[in-house]
Length: 342
Image 1: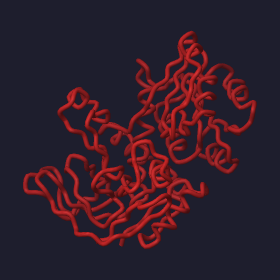
Image 2: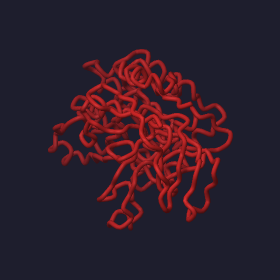
Image 3: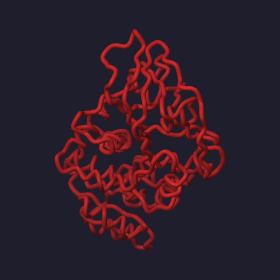
């Protein structure tokens, strides 16, 4: 079978390898489409803090079950599925407490794991698969996993409340995750949502998709502009970029008493004004992947009759053009790039 491997910075190689064999508790899945994630773009450039090159990419995957181990129940050959790619040990403290996304021995399919979803076939424990609604297109289904990350991040911002009702929200970054965070925040009843980005086209898309307004992230007055638009400090700021300037912007926007949720993958450490965080009681919250309930909520959001799939999936490349797919995603001109397998 064909398997895509990131072999050097910005270099993708297609290898011919054996089809993996199903083990106890596993399913063999044939890939339909696999998304190029922002974390893939970090990793393929050698910038991801936890995924060194070489690695086998692909965790935003849609496929069809072709074989099941005899002990697997609840799934059938022919089911179309997507992956929950975090692979917990199920034995550590966090796994036992229902926080398996924080497993102390976590492995991650498509991110440093022995297999990734950018290949024709792959195997995983059946419990890591979610059946896709029959009404979903493959492109729509490919958004379930990436949307689950903002859904999880948004829930972490509830802070003792059932949702975001009455809360003002700022989202830094109008890329894939930022725009999906917009839909998660709207789903959970945020009062007002403002977004920022360096690129006018992306800001225009954010407003078109439902943001109340969008500001130039590079403007020296962006923090003041956002606070003036809100009429107050932000209750929650989701930083979907996560580098030094945006972290500092987020803290100033949430000052005083607000919450900053770090959603984007940082390339390196940042510094923060710790005296301000302490004295102004600002909450800094990390957000790591998702849980099964987040997949359920993502499917509900994507099931909305008017969900604009075409605004998110902006290019689809055949597997033979995987290198072009990554180059296109790296250009910054796309929202979500998919690779389709025949």
